[in-house]
Length: 101
Image 1 (tube, rainbow, N blue to C red):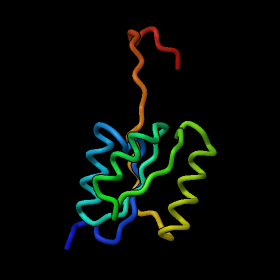
Image 2 (spheres, rainbow, N blue to C red):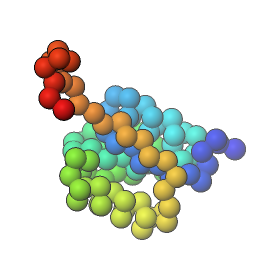
Image 3 (tube, rainbow, N blue to C red):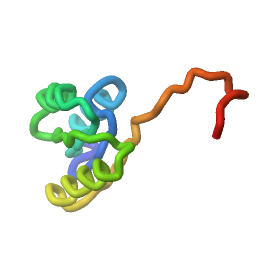
Image 4 (spheres, rainbow, N blue to C red):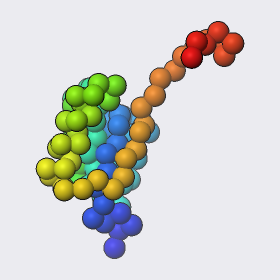
């Protein structure tokens, strides 16, 4: 039996890079994975790699409406959420002394 069989996960920025790798590994281990990001083409390409276990929602996790949409999708389709991977971030190229927090 797969380690994540029956689990439901959301992975932000799951269509490329590290998020894609996480999404594919989780789905291989039996989880149903919903990936979210702004680029629908990247999402579609990733989902083609394991159509049984991968779904996507186009959205921007910095927007409250997108968060509501992905949670609503997961709740309607699976009735639960077990794993949340926040793979999104930003890169600020400034000396730490100049950052304004």
